[in-house]
Image (cartoon, rainbow, N blue to C red; front, side):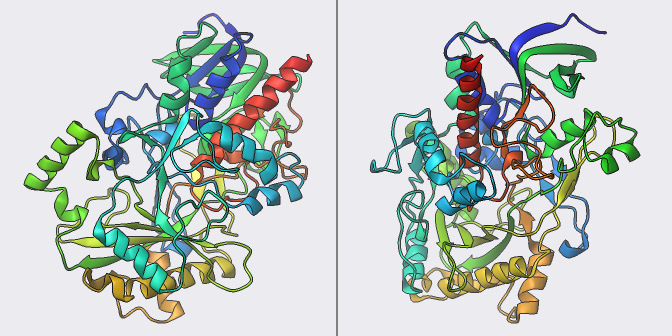
Length: 537
């Protein structure tokens, strides 16, 4: 059943991280009407607010699209889970809340590739604008923004021992890796306020919901962009068996994320003809870069047994769990405030690098299945090891003209020699740190890959068998000025008027760390670009 078309100045497709930022910023003046469409629902779950609740949501289809990779030989023909947030707030509902800007040279590299206006000096004001940092103010950090950024509050002795072990191995302690330099070890910064997760919906969308010029529709699965004479005029969506058309007087803005933005582009006839034609999709405008340049962080997880009962494995069972729950609801403190990372580490695996090329995630917990995060029964600890700037490139393309079918995700992990070298060296350094004296009273035997893993070939084999994505997908509609770029530096889609993309898919290269901070920044800058242009009309 087709209902009457509604019209708005701007139509935002996707109610995730970037969509929530844009919904707030574009409606603040009251001048423009904005519609935001989200396929999921409002996030009404206690597990969303409790930081440790992320493990309950990673396999929940109400909050997670539950995408998977295609089997690839380089990773043992395994199917690897690719969680993507579903609902208002997107992946900020289910992620580990870790806040990492990356390194200045990441953004300077974007500018050097032709993305004028995206150098670190250009984007730093947006990082400052969005954050409410509870650490010392400086020229690079700021307070008063909508998104709280605070250090992990828990300080277990085993975490301090790990940082001391890193210092013993020759690395610095660094409280603020988002400050002057990234190198070193310390506690992660997270998006929390008083022990509760703060999603993009909580930080940006909720304060704007009372505005009469903002409409938010949930349960709306956008199936295609409507095009007229080389211009995007709106979108078609399905909800509860009904088809709805929404018209955009000014722009359609895609914020569906690096998996679904390229899929929606292709379903609308915007993409590589070699991909679209075999699916029976008519090519409206050839854009060969759509769905290409897929980048992600590949992570291995090294586990050790711990000799003392001081880990989350045993603290989240029985009476101890009951006491932890009581403490959390009484004081908003304790182990339930923890997400996926406790202690950070950023290191350089070889001389001559301008900045760190490997990131660590230390947590006093261990688990066999990364997708489910079911903790072991005996005490354990884990170090996640990831290469910061992978060279490997994959693809995300539509499998079918059916808009409800999941896209084909092919990461192409470990495709280059540098990627293989960096992950192997990163794991060797992690073992060296754990072997240092400060961890002696905690350290039990190495579980994975195990002490028998010694040669580079054995390390690499472990990475191929064990490694997972850490859900930092980006780059699939990258900005630039060359023939494979999908958007220009103002985030407008090449060759199509009235269509802009403002999510992780526009990143030309990977940032050096977790990607959510960069997505918040991209959306803040996109809002300024859109509003500036609107004022010129």
